[in-house]
Image (cartoon, rainbow, N blue to C red; front, side):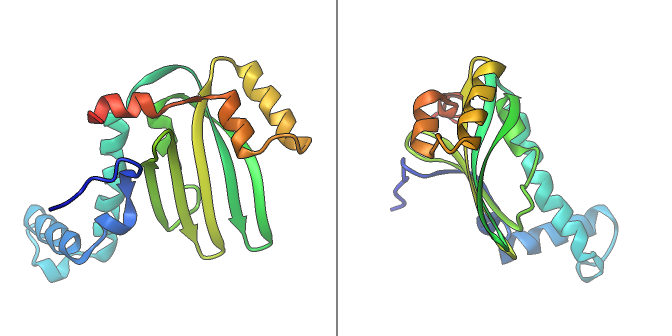
Length: 172
């Protein structure tokens, strides 16, 4: 029996969705729609269909927060790790506007938050999405980060979770 992990709920995951069965089904669907044989379907068409799946999540999570979604980013590059804040937008769907230069991606809910993990040829990115009521609060947090006075725990305490907006949509 499958047990749901309430501490890790996947919203979109490139590793789970891009498997052999997905490729086969998508190739067959594209072949039928374009009057081709399955082996004639270009591979890039399958990739385009796969990433179009993010459009479904954008549509599902078209929810205004009443605040500014900001992200605490722990980014991995060829020359080391860097921390930064991003102003994402006011709507939950805005968290999907970028793949953050990653080849493999996962947006998920942990017990309290919405997060992104991604990997690319130089490293991995870890992003925590939260919200604040005002642009001034975002700017204040940005100043604290630049001055070395903001870590992830402090960021969580100074912001509010967007998980409740996502949980309401998916019935968690």
